[in-house]
Amino acid sequence: MKIAVASGKGGTGKTTVAVGLARALPGNVQLLDCDVEEPNAFLFLNLDEVRSTEHSSLVPRIEADLCTACGLCSRFCEFNALALLKDRVLVFDNLCHGCGGCTIICPEKAIREEARPTGKIVFGQSGPIEHIYGDLNTGEAMAPPLIRAVKRRISKDKEVILDSPPGTTCPMVTAVKDADFCLLVTENTPFGLHDLEMAVEVLRDMEMPMGVVINRSDIGRSKVREFCGEKEIPVLLEIPYSRIIAEQYAVGVSIVDAEPQYRGKLVDMYREIEQIVMAGRGR
Amino acid sequence: MKQIVILSGKGGTGKTFVSASLACIAEQCVIADCDVDAANLHLLLHPELTATYKFTGGRIAKVSSDQCTGCGLCVESCRFDALDMTQNPSGGKIARVDAIACEGCGVCGLVCPEKAFTFHKSDSGRWFTAETSYGPMVHAHLFAGEENSGKLVQEVRTKARETGEEQNREYVLIDGPPGTGCAVMSAMTGVDLVVLTTEPTLAGIHDAKRVVQLASHFHIPVGMIVNKSTINKEKTAELKKYAEDQNIQYLGEIPYEKKVVDSVADLQPYVCVHDDDVSQRLRDIWQRISEVVSH
Image 1: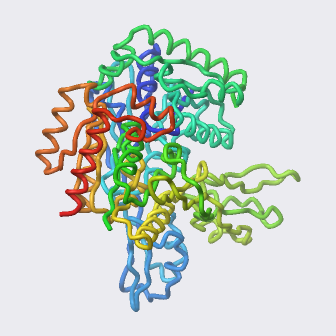
Image 2: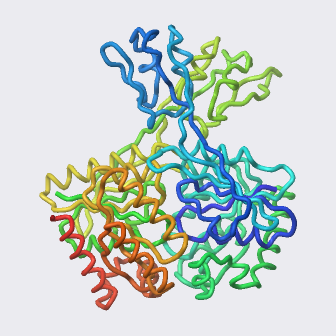
Image 3: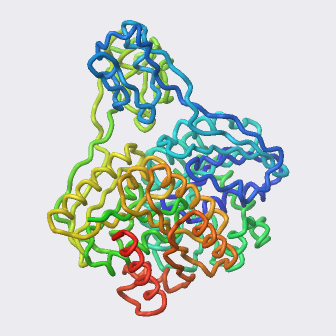
């Protein structure tokens, strides 16, 4: 089963829940950190056997001898990555989405694609947990291609947990796409509720079954529970504020080590998710 | 006019809490909420809308069922996994577009021998101009699942700057998005100061350093606020030392207080409802920010 852990608002505890779940489950687990702008899960994992591979995006390169400056490529490019000058075409690597259209449209076959490094994919092992994360290079704008590259490493015979980036737009959708279930981690504040509503909207569009974890559940006095009730979304776990969890989080200690009772609670939650997915509920 | 952006890298470190209070203290701001994915500042500042604008983002491909012969060339050519083949009612195959994955690049239309594709601008969000008790505000809402957040951030910033110039405001105060990608870069380019609001945790420090890297990539000066500083005093000291080493202006610390969370629950900027040590710290921080940007 593939479970995505997401939230609209940042800092609600996605990584706490994703790492906690990975640590609590028996057997082989794969934890993929899809927050390639700010990967954090590895900070809680003491990784062994760390290795990495470069991730590249394809960008066009123009053979000056062959280019007739006809302008077809720059007119085709939806992302303004190609600019037609008087006698040549200029490429803006940062704007290129790598669709490959310019190489198809060029009548002179003057455009080929070249791999340009935009980040790396890091692999490591933490006990029975296989961890993979993407790390986008400074100044790179496009997270989704690297998120897709991380997800191509999904293992078919492991329990898979996907730690998603915050927000409700393109990167979050790319991260949670094709998961069997999405856990939304929120807090009981107006910010948490407002952003949860948006996250629920996008998951409903995707027809993704979902459940909610309320973190720091005794702080904030908002109406997250009422909202979940109205929308018939199960609240699967509540984590009251704990100074111990917060202090241990600060130094990279997982919730299951800070407060061991969460080991059982997270496993119970996982079993409940299995039931929901098997019954086809929670959409 | 000086532009100041509040950033953090990691989410939930207190950007919006800080932004709302600084807007309240500064009085002379245009306020821009550039976290267009998950805008929250309006919940604290209660803007009264003066105008609403449509944001059209990218294009989306559409297949004509009359023309598609199910050849599959488009599926092979799409680099974004946005197309697959499905059964049509008459039993044949037909291409299907995943509207969320589609980036509107047009390659499917280029390779389709039947010219079965058309492209439509998607209605991707809204942006607003508004008045608050603390000054004019521009904010936005990018619809769920949409892309082009960087472009929408640009629109918000352009309008905020124009408003500031019209009304002779001294500052544009920008509440930024989390992360270090597309939207953050749009929120950051050309500003006078990045106010990095971080927290003394491993993740907070890790993410803050990435924002510093990005800011130095664009040659933008950085100031640092350590929020929830009492969660871990060693890590707070580590951040302060890091700031000194990197030539980052250390703007101040805010202790972890339940009152801060409660002020958010009460939907008010903290300094408007409390006159205490935390409020004084926020006023001192603003004083330092205004000194730094006036140099």
